[in-house]
Image (cartoon, rainbow, N blue to C red; front, side, top):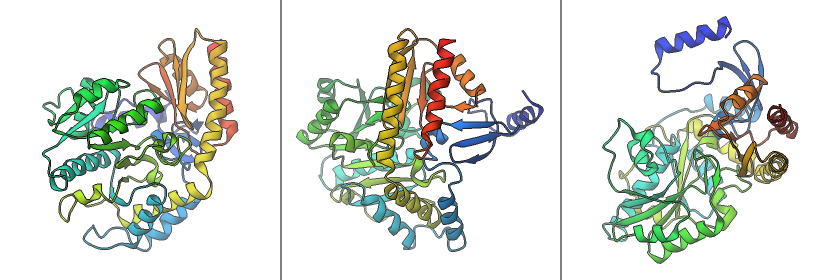
Length: 398
């Protein structure tokens, strides 16, 4: 541990709540798919702020859009009409079948908006006292009390109970269990097409289509959490588009503003009838500054066909990793993912392997102690992915 890093670490322990398990790294600068620490060491960033800086750190076009808007208008609240919100809404809605947008500040808030709209739509439009939200085992929907209840993980809710009622969880992959859980009080089913925090687990297309079919049969809402998997990461603009799904609403965040805190809910025109003036609100959500940046993000993603690029690069990387798995089945249990959302599950605890990758200047995430989670910038150079694959092979063979 260098003196510079030790000083930063000590200062943090003195000043901040200890709610994070930090990596042994103090970052001071970023550009593209590269980060530099307090000692000047360079790293390949395959985490991108947990799928956030999808266009890379300090992207020149994003910086220019930010600077231009910073000299025009930052914040006036949602009491005013704002052109920046409308431009972002036009661009976002052009990517899906949804007709209305609601802007907020995070993925948890976006999921809260989906949950609240589902309940209010059922009660005010459908005239049914339906409020229960069904979620799936292995999911992660956020850390507010409501989204913790939807997530249903005891280790995350320890000390925060009682959680809000009205949430039911069923085993993933079991359509019979899902149908058995549907009652007259059910408002919606909430799913992640790819369970990111769960270890990068893509759900089977037949199962997802079965979930939507059950929702339609029982006249309840079908919601997709696109917070981590959305915005070109899985090879389509939205993960649900890989399987021909038509969710009534989706939650969006992470890469939406490439690092500025922003979330959104996209809903069909029909479901959006559940909201009226004053029914839901946010002070900061959809401010002019973040909206202008997010609109530029969507513009670049569409212009540069980054969904197609994610599909191509991710496919090539997974091909290499699966070849490595075939050569070393005693070391790699599974390689899974969609596009540039990839999980490499090892057969043994992988903390030491992750630490060695970090020592070699490669940043990724370790999920559940055994799965390397890769969420690189969508415009990362293919050579950087090759460096990771070669380093992983070298470490495993060593």
